[in-house]
Length: 91
Image 1 (cartoon, rainbow, N blue to C red):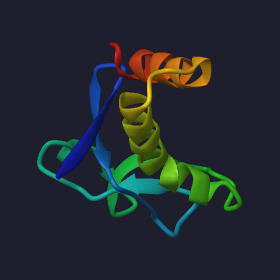
Image 2: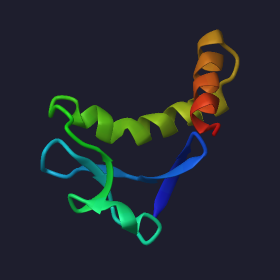
Image 3: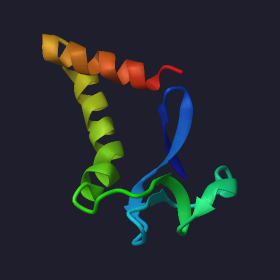
């Protein structure tokens, strides 16, 4: 199982639409087994269906932003992105 670290906590990825009640889930695993609902590890629920693609895509967007910040660290906007990544990863 893949994970990303947000605020010092491991979060399973990738995320997918649970096809019920606007829930977004990650695949169940032994590490997160006690939190299985809607067929997976619940990331969020009651999401408006218009926003589901953004929520589901958030881990990939985060990874892309993190890679970009690591590759190009010479402009103010990139430094701001790197600071946000650090803030999200710091417990």
